[in-house]
Image (tube, rainbow over all chains, first blue to last red):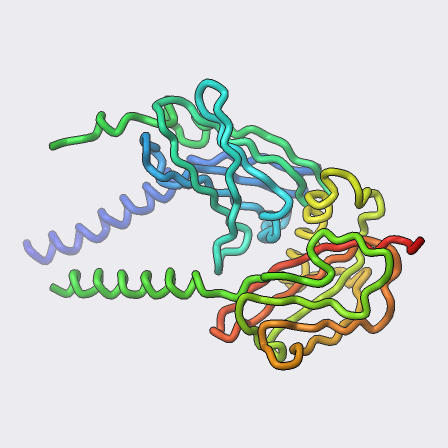
Length: 152
Length: 156
């Protein structure tokens, strides 16, 4: 009985882990630059997002053959578009050991929807797109009140 | 008990990764500096890093980019050129560069420091947009890469 229980639990955990990884991967949106020459995938790390938490936008950049695109931290800029027209310019930084991955931090201060604008140049192509926060977080509003999940 | 020990081990490992990640060599300055427009070819390119790099275990490349359509004096020139540079850097790091426009360089340490690398050019640079790229091994044994763009224009 004991053996059976410990044998099933890891399997169940593995399935849950795979499911959650799949869900996280789905919570991203891909847009292309050029004629499909580059793919720029944007998502929030740690969605759902909450007021006053330090949140992160991630950008995954790859070319049409799936190779990582590096060096974009100096040719692409990102903005967080908050409620009531608020705009925050954020800095994209590289992640050591993970080519093609870029992160940017921001701290939302109110409940509402936040989008991400990515603009600049990739290779020879100009790029300027807004990623819907609702689409990339699968949550509406994008940023929630932490009181809703608070417990004494 | 074993799970707790494993968890502690993972935390220690992660802490080590974070600590070393903060200590990598990054470019501090360069000559020509990033985004410079110079009216004559430099004889050398200098790259100064925040810590030493192992020249013998590093790669440095200088390439004249296919970017004649970019006005070096336009407001967005640097972003445009860095966009082009990202394609070159990605190709060189993945081992699939076209080789077109590459200028042979010889890399050596500047006298008395491992933090500054001098790239001697084999020939004067013709007018154009250039990208200097590296895949370097820092003295703390971590690999780093990066790039700098600059432009050579006709002298007056």
